Length: 241
Image (cartoon, rainbow, N blue to C red; front, side, top):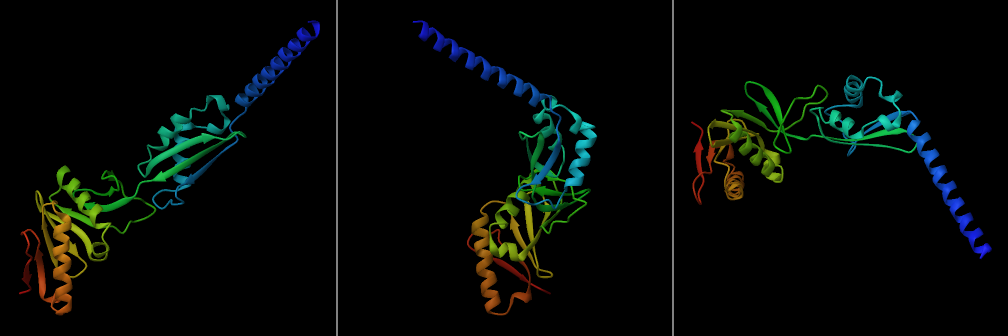
């Protein structure tokens, strides 16, 4: 019986030692200061902002963050600060065991440039995005009588075009002459494509491709200034004067 009690006592003592060591280590770990910060862009793209710009934002927000004890660093707050950068889509901040802060940043992707009273991008999610001082994106232009609805429709058209090799090669912009009316601008001079509304895009673009291929084969493409895709099962083409 005595031997059994001694064994139990030893186990309790060992458990207390382990708990004590863990508490001591945890206390020391929390008391350590942040030793540095590593910023990375995923997936390895930082064309619209850069590490210096991000660091400048953090210095404005945090003052001297690297002198803070680890336990006082609120990772969610740092993530929120980073997301204030208009060029960033997402920020994931975490801390390594040695006290290094790591920030994985994902940039927004512009898909169109809007030119109206102001100039800005539409990003991949369809949201306004400011121009970057570091890089200019080669994306289709959106011009004309713009509204929230026309920007939503233009984003829909641009997103469709981004998946179509023919449009990627030939479309350079979208003009909005009136609400709900969209004209695609091609790389050819004086050649516009009347799309009408933003519905039935696949059907309309298939008609455009059929017309384009036939006109190329006939070597008559340069004769046309406008192709109208609004009518069911037909293409109305206007020749240059």
